[in-house]
Structure formats: C-alpha cells, structure tokens
Length: 198
Image (cartoon, rainbow, N blue to C red; front, side):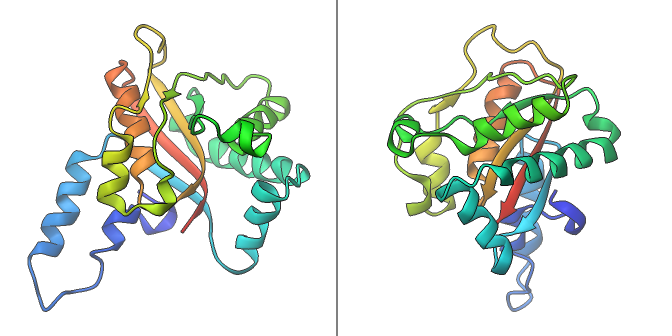
C-alpha cells in the first residue's frame, strides 16, 4: 500500500476504467496476492519542488537533507505501531554505483536515522549482484533484471519484522525483490518506506 491512497504503484496503472474491462480488478488482485511486503509508505511525490529535493540530495550530495529525510522517516515509524520493533534494512546499491558516485544515498540515510534514534536496529541483510540499471527498463523487465540478483545470505536474517528503506519507487520492482529475498530468509512481517514515488 502507498500512503493515504492505499494503492501500490503497479495497481495505479489499472486505476482508470478501460472500456469496462474486468482485467482491471484481476490485475489489482494479482498484485495484492503476489506482493511480498505487507505495506508501503512513501513520503513525497517525485514532482515539482520535491523533485528538486531529491536531486539536491542524491546527485548534488546535499547531506543536510539526509537529516530532514531521517526525521520524516522516524516520525512515520512513531506513527505506526507495527514499525516500532522493525529492523531497518536499506536497499543495497548496484555494484559499482558507490565507486562511480562516491557514495550511496540510502546507506547514508539509514546511518543518519541511527544517529537520531540510537535504539533503532539497522542491518545490512541484503546483497546485490551486478545487473542492468533499473531506470532504463519497464516493470516486467525490471523484475526479470533483478531476479536472483538481490538476496539475503543464508542464515544472515535474524528478524521477524523489517522495514525496507529506499529513496525512489517507480514500478515497485526493487522493493518487491528485496521483500521476497527477506521473506525467503525467514522474515514474517515486511514493510517498505520510500522517500519519493515517481
């Protein structure tokens, strides 16, 4: 689910009637049945002034914004009892990305969360193998691109509830693959939180 809309990104593709086609509800139901996470929150739309926020943080490395985002995430956690004991798990970066850009914005963000809220448990449970850059692909290809590329090493996951953190969600493919890997690792309750939806 996303924010107040209670609709995930893929489902919004089918939100408008298509000549009364029954495929709309079937596609939504398939998404809900097959989704590996329980709920997803997103803080901002990736448009207008909010788009400038992400650009300043992710590409111009305005680190002060990490504290702003961290505080927003902590507030969201405190508003939702199911997240109180959740272990925070960042989405792993694409191999080579950190070397190319000099940093990983999600990794830095979760470390700022830890600074503000020392009792929060942060674990880097997920690993990522080399794959194509996601933004060049559609939803189906994104899922295929990440298939078996994000994983949790055997025996590494020791949590019943996790909150996956990422910066942007577009099709939901990366979140789904991460959640599936954690579920296969034994996690019972899986939630997601992204800064922006595109």
